[in-house]
View (spheres, rainbow, N blue to C red):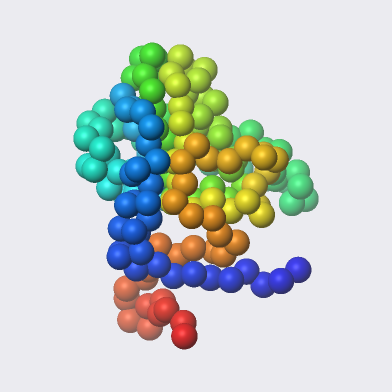
Length: 168
């Protein structure tokens, strides 16, 4: 197994990813559900650019109580925070997160929105097809594919010697 490659992005890189996403949207959305924490900043940028004002958040956790790695992947999600059904019913909602790695989090949010009577469409900045647990299923909208661990500018520690620097 090869070591995971890190890729550190700048704010300019994020702007380019947002600019790449915007022309992909072939419909209007009645709501946006931002998956915390990673979806907050890209969701805000997209909502501003698209004029979406009905913005909601979803916080999901997959407990790691089991010993085996494979068993952890089968854990049921816990919704720490989720919009009420009435806020989603009948709405076309754009579900935004920063990255689709395994796809578990954003897929669980999409399914829960559908159960509430909404229509969910997934959107991420980065899609990692090599970690995807859902076969050929992919995000409805994504700006780039990657096999790297992406470090977004809002994740950079800025205190003293903990500053992450771009390599090379």
